[in-house]
Length: 93
Image (cartoon, rainbow, N blue to C red; front, top):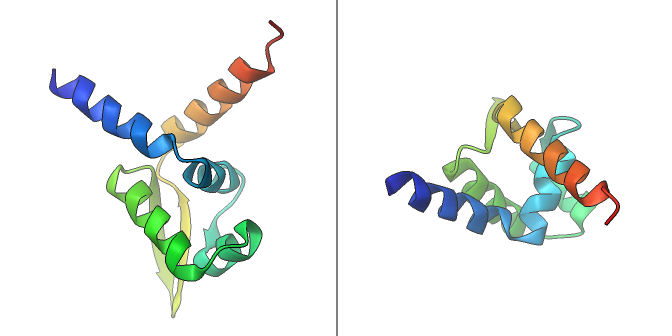
């Protein structure tokens, strides 16, 4: 039952439109918090909050370069999840 609880938490985190947008953007390239804030037209603290939640679920990882922090998707599972969701919604009904 623990696996189901983890999946539920994952889908709760993914259920937020802003976090989904962040994952979508990071599926193309690594971005710093300031770039994400500009693209999403959000404040740095708001973007950082969403990134903390994504990091806690191991969906994103980061690396430091001087004072800059760059985020990317944690692994290919996340890219596959995004691509599968896109394919699902692209199908005609």
